[in-house]
Amino acid sequence: MLAMATVGFAVNFWAWALLSPLGPRFKDGLDLSSFEQSLLVAVPVVVGSLGRIPVGALTDRFGGRVMFPIVSAATIVPVLYLGLAGHSSLAALLIGGFFLGIGGTAFAVGVPLVNAWFPPERRGLAIGVFGAGMGGTAISALTTVKLVDANSMSTPFLITAAVLAVYAVAAVLLLRDAPGRTVPTEPLARRLAATVRLPITWQASALYAVAFGGYVAFSVYLPTYLKTGYGLTQADAANRMAGFVLLAVAMRPIGGWLSDRIGPVRVLAGALAVVVAGAVVQSFTPALAPVGTIAFLAMAAALGAGSGATFALVALRTPANQVGSVTGVVGAAGGLGGFLPPLVMGSLYGAYGSYAIGLVLLAIVAAAALAFTLTAVRAGSEGGERKPRTGRRREHRTADTTA
Image 1 (cartoon, rainbow, N blue to C red):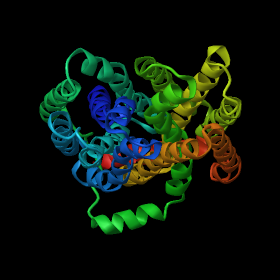
Image 2 (tube, one colour):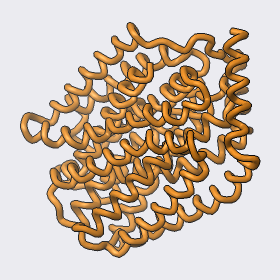
Image 3 (cartoon, rainbow, N blue to C red):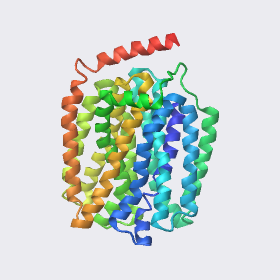
Image 4 (cartoon, rainbow, N blue to C red):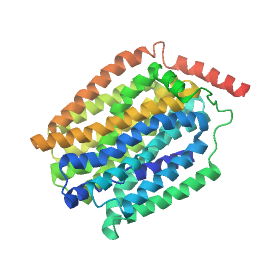
């Protein structure tokens, strides 16, 4: 089930990220401004982020077995629209990008599905492995431009739609929810109201907005940054972005694994400190070889590990029947955290001809998140993170026995 969920997440994220590698091409072909290009790649991000709130709550109610095929099948429609007809104007691209955001909601389906299959002491690693499905953005980065150059604009969209269809059918046939899954009976509005009253919801949302939001922002805007700031070709910039994504993906399960052993607060603190340092260094626009590359790769590793640690924290402190709802809100915060930076970077570059201010702002936000982690979030773990975990383990076993 972990493998099926991870593949589903990767495939939907592949679709979700199809517009990003083509951003520079659309800018040149449609004569877009820097802000319009940023808006184009940011719209799927914000829709996919906000959509996680209802999708997470629906997953608590109906289970991942129902929701994964629905989300995957629904994403096929905007993918086909963009590939066949929706790439001739900015308005058409924005409409297609809006509905393409459905693919981004898959994250809120997979976390509660995976969480229910594993005991508390293994959830950090399990959810980290699932989170590696965000590498679907790397598939898009590595293949989209090459497929367009070798064939036509519709080719990557048609291939992605076919893969989504195959996965939707496989999910119907193979995917199962965990035995004894707790199904909430309260209305959706009441469950969401209960979710927003949990302290972990807001703590994890703030941290994920920085960790995963930073990852999303770089994954959608890095090709533009490298092409504009360093004069790289579109293909070279897309390949470097793929390297950034792959390292972040690899570090996400490691962040979860470390959280199972030393606690998510320590992992988050270390990751955020690295992001602060990397952003400060890159704000001086050093040469790509080697300083710029090291700064970006260090931030990629830290953002991936921090994303894994955030959901290890969620798994540790969230009641079992609210994991989907909390995941939806936290996932939305992470996606929204990735929505604003591309717009800010595009606006700042248009105004000042430099990305330095945007990177300084990233360093300031990461430093604030670090201070928050070491104060409010750590205070919520007083007495050690192992003690709550033991309590959760007893709860889990009791629930299983009752079921």
